[in-house]
Length: 404
Image 1 (cartoon, rainbow, N blue to C red):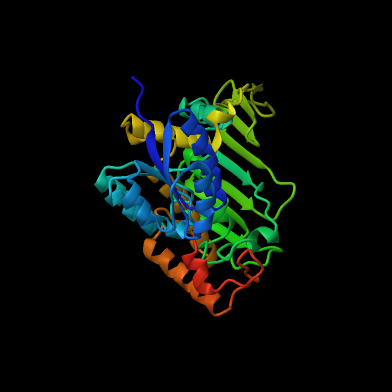
Image 2: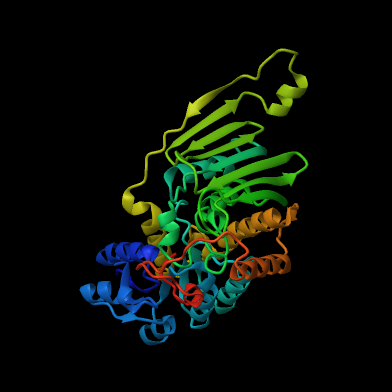
């Protein structure tokens, strides 16, 4: 007997919310989910698609939680609002699939995860690159020990090109009050997650953050050194101000090296002996024996990749009352990526090496200082518009939750 479709509500009908809505319609046709509500503080954003498909629209998330009683919600609002919505849903026994990043501070993520554990509900994070076939295969290679002990990772994530018009499209973008950071908080969380998933959390972080060309308050470029121990230091670089951009991950281990390029190419160099054996026992002038191998990874079907794969996975896990381990990415995974993001910003702005776990108190103090400086006009600012040609008032940046 087929199980009933899982009741779903979408909170936030901006750019990402509309994308989730399209995917939910496809899953509704498959009988996986049943859309019971759409919500946005700008009610018209929810009413239009809601009326077209016969789905109730609401202006406040508590109306959705209390009146339509979904089994799970997708939270697609700006990340500073995630904690409030997630905790409210957890307290009502509702499962949550949350957009990235999980929150704006790790302290907020701590509270979200604790609330969901206490309520016994699932918290998933929409790290939509995890289902990508190449990354799945790369994770498998590492987990199987095929590379041996990892001693270096170099992660370049410069494919996040954004124009000034992008930052001008919403009053919350490119601001400390609205985003709580720039590229490292809005675009790079996907790659911070991949780094943590493939390479693990480092012990310390030393980062630099800067803003080139764009007229925004926050950073658009970050470079970091990530130390895992005395014999391993990794590097991470990301920006929204580079063209052409690329995504390239190099993972070097005792038994070989793996290179992942732009989500579709996977190469592995396999050493015949371990690097330590070669370095310590081979004669002068010799070179290690080994060879490159092109790993063929058939791409996943569109319906089994990206955001729709994340939603399907979450809905099925709810439907089957499965454990958190069945999710592509959990709340803890979201916290790991945010831990790294907060550490990078704290390191860059305090000009010091930061230990992981990140000091919650220090980061909250830094964010408060940066927001106060922004309010006083001491930071590089841009002309913020409301997307309709007018200037957005400061309070609107915080209260309007248009998109993630």
